[in-house]
Image (cartoon, rainbow, N blue to C red; front, side, top):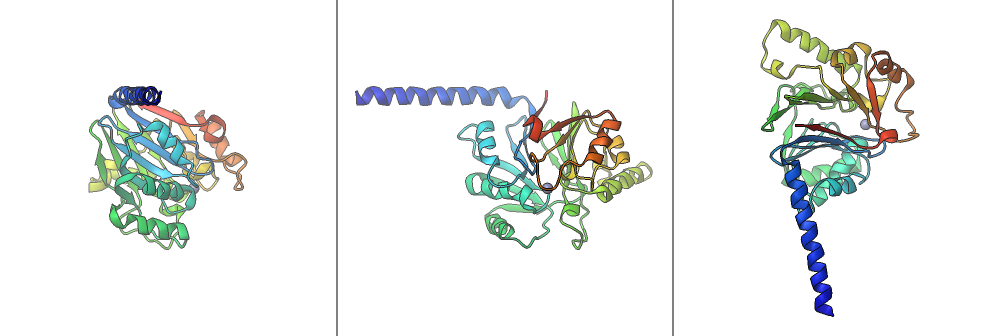
Length: 283
Ligand SMILES: [Zn+2]
């Protein structure tokens, strides 16, 4: 009797393994981005053709853990690259939870400190991890795609707000691009517009990353009125714009005027609190 139970358990285990292998193969030829519904915060997972996992922000609390468990096979405990846009808890907290549970190869972030217990925990956990400062012009080669850093500049003035120091990334594939704005404000959006213009007449090393139009936009600062300037959104001209925010959050995100900007420009909105996760696949 005991052996029979063991056999059944073993067969169930084999089935799970077989299913996971199948799911893994299925994903192998795709570049995929999943924006997780983590409530009031941001978290996105990029899975590359080669099976690399890149995490951009982790959302608040530990909400990202069940999302990751569903996305990755149970033995895939590796995050090849973790990117933190900035050290506020609604972006950082989940990354701390991931650092505790997963094997993280590299971390890319703005290295701007923040006075919080969570930040100190983050610093401690980073001690055994390769950690690099993110700045304009960097490019991560993903095989059939690139991940570029558009912001901040290398000698960034850290006296500004943490939101304004957000790392801005753009994922580029032949089939389209995804722009991740972190919690950047209109001032940073305008810098991008200026730099892009500058690059039309000159060729600085960082100009290779200074392209703005993107098929998918992760809207800055959860749809707050601090961000999403009309001219900038027009320049990005996304097919879909994602607002990652919690239902009835205390900040009133997304703000009405921001919604009007997208409505004016006829851009489709995906709101995580209404529509859940958003999955983008490139083939
Ligand atoms: Zn935020």
